[in-house]
Length: 214
Image 1 (cartoon, rainbow, N blue to C red):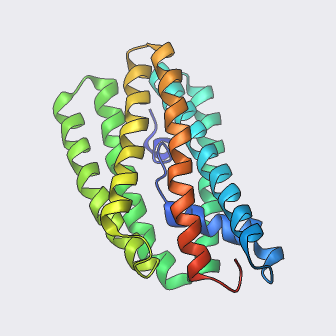
Image 2: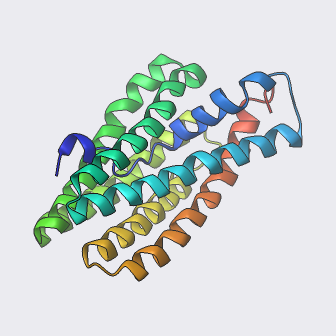
């Protein structure tokens, strides 16, 4: 299992997703305002985050199955999605925010890599530590989102959404590792649907933060 590829297993870069939506979907409509533009933003967010969930599950599934070619293909697709997100951060929030966010993002990814590796090796202690690290990370991430959105989204609310997302994908990974593919696909559906619960408040916050665009 290559750590370079696994670093893209789970991408919780919600700010990046917002940036990607704003940068790629709304740039041509920067002068638009009102509910139509806000609805477009919500749709763009759901597309990006839904893609993330599906590609993350494909990547973990191939990795845990030991399918090197499948893993590398899925990881490359997920990396492309992640690169689109990261590249748009600076265009919306500025390079200072992008540079501050980058190490936080990478720290979280490392925690999930630890969990996946622990699962593959049957190392319960490593899994437990990764879950504890991810739980603490959700609070840290919530504080960052609260700051970036200028308190339009509360730390506690963001932390809860992030933790639900982590646990949803964790359940999929657990089922994949157990070769319970029925449970894995069943778990993927609510993990995907949960992205709508993230998109709606994010879209509302961004629309308020950038009224000239939305």
